[in-house]
Figure 1 (cartoon, rainbow, N blue to C red):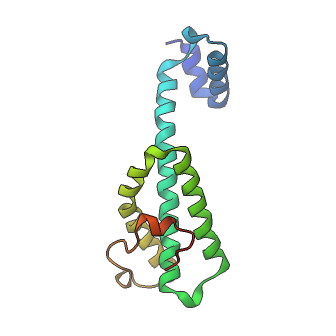
Figure 2 (cartoon, helix red, strand yellow):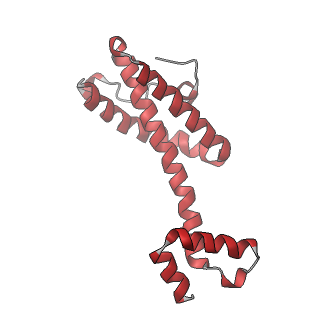
Figure 3 (cartoon, rainbow, N blue to C red):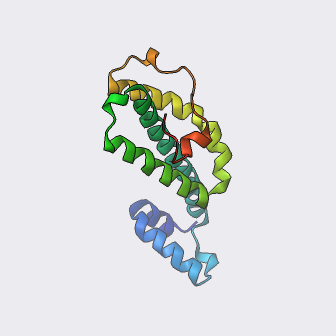
Length: 146
């Protein structure tokens, strides 16, 4: 690999990325930094999936707070629920292959969301259901609130 490209990748990622894009646009494939380009493409998909999983955790946390503290419901909670749903659905539309992974991730997201909800509300974690009380369909349904 060209040491200059590797140094550029290490020193100025933004400039490196634009340089790689220009090489692709001009079809100058021989000068591409393939090892780093491959690594970045692979990690890009992982980052997007992690973002959806994080949004799912936040959404579940707010659904739990909504369910267990109905007298504390605020507009911020409701807005967060709808915002996370919209962002998750948009992500799934752009990356439909992630849906099966998201369904698997729901249970981990519940574990984290449950802990976060307990910390934020001060309600003992034992008062929250042991396992995920919602289906993915309910979680993403704009007409569903527990």
